[in-house]
Image: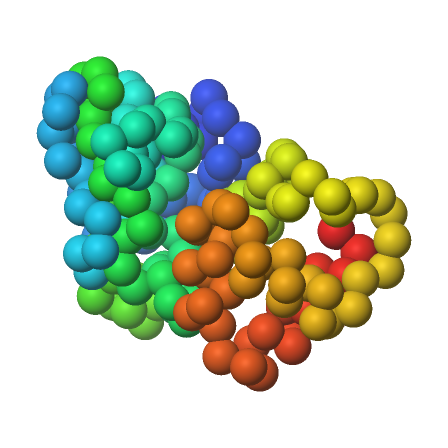
Amino acid sequence: MLELLHQNTNIFLRWAQSELVGLAEIARCFSFNKSSVLARKEEPVDYFGLVVSGLAVAIHDDCIIADLPCLEMIGYMALLNLAGTHYHFFDVMGETDGVLLTLRLEEAKELQLKHPSTFTKLQDIASAKCVEVVRYQYLADFLPKELKIGCSYLTDKRIGELFEFSSNPCLKEFWAGLENKERVVFGRSARFL
């Protein structure tokens, strides 16, 4: 399965064969079907998942808020051990038949010890997804309408307010889970998004 992803997608493009083998030794693939529960809101995140085929959906308050097609991820923030991300924000259900590549978080430690370069590259994929999600939510009109988004310098306090008072529950939860020191670092990094 990983070899097919390596050949047909960009997600494992720069991975060596030995790194794919290292991930394959520990990660597992599971089939899911329509209405399979892949994650429940407020339950602990215990795995990193990558949708290999099919479609899953994120559900909040009985409404589908996001499609999770091939190459979308579940638990990527928990894989990075980010504060406030150890519980699922949404229910995730299968929408069609599909396959999910999973790595239990406890097994991620084993991967880190046995295959450090593989673990680092997996973290790179998860980090890129985090940046993509924060950037999308920042630029996709989830912010209060009176804010003008442009290429401007924002203060740490203003960045905090954008998250703290956002109508998007994911942004609010993300910000609430950060410690003060993490907020400062994030604020300094996010000034020029």
